[in-house]
Amino acid sequence: MGKIRKMFTNVRVLVLVIFLILGLFAVYPNPWNEGLAIRHVEKNSSASLAGVENPAPTSTPMSRERILAVNNNAVTDIKSLYSLLSLVPSNATITLKTNKNLYRLTARPASDGKMEDFGLSVYPAPKTNIRKGLDLQGGTRVILQPAEEVSKEDLGVVMDNIKERLNVYGLGDIVVRSTTDLAGKSYILVEIAGANQEEVRDLLAKQGKFEAKVGNTTVFKGGGDVTYVCRSADCSGLDPNAGCQQQEGGWYCGFRFSISLDPKAAQRQADATRLLAVVSSPSGNYLSEKLSLYLDDEQVDELNIGAELKGSAVTEIQISGSGNGVSNQEAIQNTLESMKRLQTILITGSLPVKLNIVKMDSISPVLGEEFLKNAIFVCLLSVITVSVLLFIRYRRLSVSIPIIITMLSEVFLTLALAAIIGWNIDLASIAGIIVAIGTGVDDQIVIADETLYRKKLEGGEESSWKDKLKSAFFIIFAAYFTLTAAMIPLLFAGAGLLKGFAITTILAVTIGVLVTRPAYAAFIEILTKE
Image 1 (cartoon, one colour):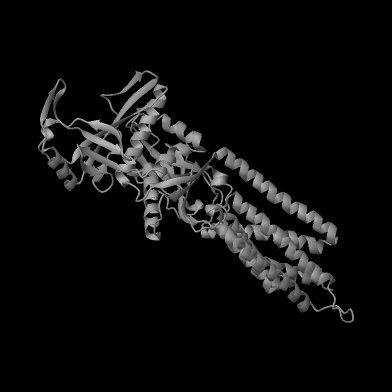
Image 2 (cartoon, rainbow, N blue to C red; image 1 turned 60 degrees about the vertical axis):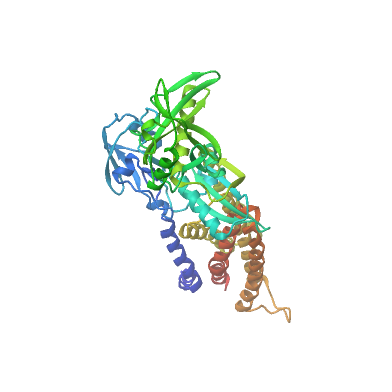
């Protein structure tokens, strides 16, 4: 009991205990957390109109709003949620219960005639505040490189535009950050949880320059000239006049949606049509020039301009386009995706600079779960293996048990610090934690050997505890600074892909050197000192 009392009154041990308690609050583990966490709320959707708010990008996982029930029926997983929503008839009102509020949502038919999902993107409720990286939860990672050199200010504008474009498109949980490689080249790293390559490739790879021309005159562009883009079912979707038609080699579908123009853009259109001739046709009277739509300098459609619009500054116009596919269902899906992308570009405008895709990775959520299980298994296996070897080496529980406690404490405090600063734990980060475990064991062996076996060379007298620990920590700090120096270049290697490994390793080793390893030295001193 005397040694236990000494341990819990030792300053270094008390510091470790305090950090562990604070880490517990930071991680906030709750294995009984229920429902589905809201990842993203689409603009102008039923959920958005009912008052459901988008979670802030900086919000902790456990603070996110969770869906608990629909019409008093408990929601346990994603399948149960969409099963309940699919039973709701069009224009009916449902009650959505969350852990923060009670909402009343009105069901509206989606553009393709099916029941919409109310604009909610969800995922299983998190159990802790530890943020899982893309490797562990699934999604798409893209590395983009500007086609020309840009300043830091312009790079910031590009990243803001990318964030806005992805948010408008309906993708949530987005990480967009700049990075450089060892040669000083600038890149943009984009990580999108729950998205696939097809959804993001065109949004990121192309500038998205949209122009509407009458003849050779540009009358409006996407972005500033467009004040409103309709994306609800009552004014956008499959074109009822065009519908879907079977053609040679597949199916063809048309879409349409309305937009509002800035008065200056409307006036440009009026000026461009004022001198055009009126042409009669079986379907009506139209102007001699059409309104041609260009996306990234390629014509995607052309619209007849009614004779009544000649010289008129109209702010409300209809945009149309098309899509195709092998089957009717594929054509509908591709058409709606084309419409959605065009709507997004009309809202956000073009990127200031063209971007090239350097690398694109897509990881399924199922594969991410397997990665997580394997990573946890590897971490536990490394701890067990080291523990067995240390017991064989020292044959003393008073030495090997504190090492196990220290290793587990370092892992936990690293995860807690990652939760506090909002750092995502991915496979690279887990590799960094394993490296930190290895360096921690090395340091603890140094402490154990120095304190148990070191003797002064002169006369063979045993060194004092102060001298022993001083000698041990001189070795530990030398190794610490060497490791940190080795990790710094990895912050920029591989266009930032190794950044997680480098930062996690530095954080974990720093925690060990400043908190856990001094506490381990106190354990050894108290438990082995006669």
